[in-house]
Image (tube, rainbow, N blue to C red):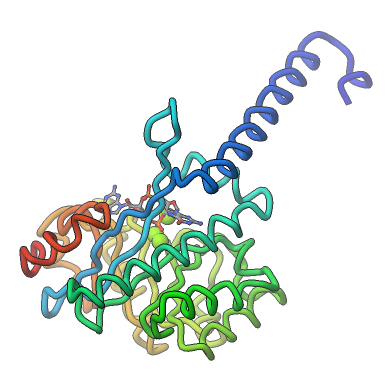
Length: 280
Ligand code: C2E
Ligand code: MG
Ligand code: MG
Ligand code: MG
């Protein structure tokens, strides 16, 4: 391509592209090695029932302590891992770790038997032939019932594709919960609520962060649409008490955000719950 176009600017672009690609390949190798070396951990953020103020579950969010780099945010390495089946290795590790952790919390009495854990799985993993076995394996090893696990699928993925949809139905048959993450930013039409085996809609935090009265109305519409199809609703990114009052008035079921707690290391969850109803 560079030869056909000619000229130094094209060559410069080509070099920049090559540098970028090798940086991505290096990052990918580092994620792969880091998985084997135990450099990843999960932090847990409570999901709070807006009626009772009780914690109904936790979302597991991946953290990477990359040697020589300090903490790396998921937004900086998940997209690279998603370029290959490496993301499925990440997903399998997350499933095993989160299920194991919840099983330990249950056994120790840190959490009640109604508390669930939600994991984020990438669209590429949701489309894999191994997906259902990967989930079943995490349940079997941890001894956790399927009903204690929720899989979060981000809305940027076509969930009705021929590779993904049967997997989602198989997860539902297992008894695993399914949440549609970052709702309102992607492609899922309300019509698809009818066909996708979803339990919960998670309203993207951009709608909460906005001051525009239209966005307040949109949140109300999303809650209404979800309830029409029998889905529960979680609002993401709740940072201020006024947002709780608003969400309650709009009939939203649950919420998650810095107001209640930031995602915390597993070791801090006991203390978090000991504090009682977080922030409501
Ligand atoms: P997400 O699944 O939508 O997770 C919510 C993100 O919002 C988290 O960022 C969380 O820390 C952040 N957050 C929670 N409450 C608030 C708030 O009140 N205000 C603001 N400004 N932010 C809040 P995080 O942990 O950096 O994760 C970013 C994204 O990376 C996640 O978005 C998810 O898409 C992805 N991700 C995280 N962990 C995993 C994982 O284990 N596997 C995969 N495939 N993706 C993951
Ligand atoms: Mg999520
Ligand atoms: Mg989200
Ligand atoms: Mg997100």
